[in-house]
Length: 182
Image 1 (cartoon, rainbow, N blue to C red):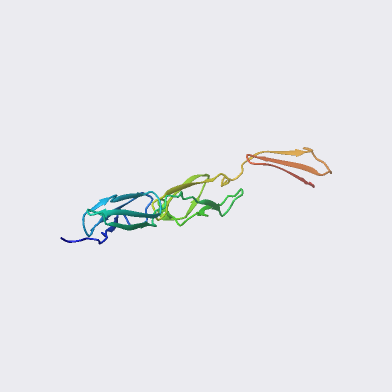
Image 2 (image 1 turned 90 degrees about the vertical axis):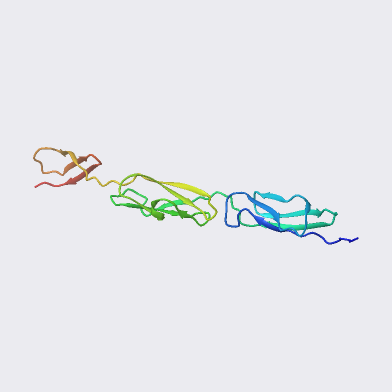
């Protein structure tokens, strides 16, 4: 008759060992002998789990599984603009202030977008764990059209030896100039 008082041992394998935003399955394999007990565990976040089991004779064993590569947190970024007031120039929007390192998945991977006119552009990005996000850039202060004179008003409108007030009304503004005629 043989007496077995040795604790059984097992190895742990994981459904993935790379950065992920998904659950990770841990399973016991290559046990030193047949075991009884829980042989699988689902990690929904990083941490440790101790598998406790026995062999067929009741000898206890345990193996610790550790996962540190799950990240399900949201990724977000802000937008900055090189020009933030009325302009007749192109405006460059830059993806900035991200809460973690990201890769832009559109726009050719570039973190800048040049607006040649008013409009919107959505930056789409992803972190190393597969979490995705997007940030909308909006520009409404570009005006590249030249003003067109609508009317010119002189006051007084006849011959005078007094200052003349000239009011120029365009499709964009009204300007008043006081001057002398001679």
